[in-house]
Length: 271
Image (cartoon, rainbow, N blue to C red; front, side):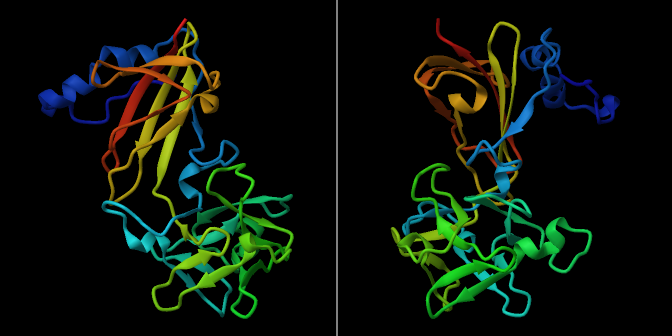
């Protein structure tokens, strides 16, 4: 898949490092005869270039160690930005000339930067507390919840029609932004990534990566995202642990993955 390079002082490697670097199952993926490079696939929508940048809505009962800043937002009246209190990034439209619906993501704030995508205009919004709409200053489309379920609990921009999925209630006290459709909150998901690539013989090598700073997270890989039939069973093996995890149908959800940690899997259809 790519050259294997040791990036540490080989004279000072610990036993644990040696075990990691000499993992035969992981090396076999790198040396697989098919030679197809793995690629990053989106967690929330297979069309997004970076799953970790997505935004979504969720219910009002966060569980466990959910960081409340993930559902807090800051609206700057001066520049029109909507920033995540969790990451400081700006709510952005994915492309400068999107169709409908247009995907949204969080990106570094670049409003007014002539060298930025769309010169940062894709990050400027008009929040109207009177009619409870949030409208893109770039194209006049309204922030909306995807009620058709095309991208799960996702949000997008669509032609303004005053439907409940385009009505947003901004709580200036706690910074939350709630949609009227199902009273769900706009949330910045943790930075999770899935990488995958085919192996000789029809298996898929899959890496689940948690780039988040604060949380342990479960990551779900769907068969359809890696080119496997949705309703077919497959065996899942943890390559780092040399452990068969079982047979699953349609998808596999990992146990908690620590911050900046990764799980590497081999997924093979049951014949």
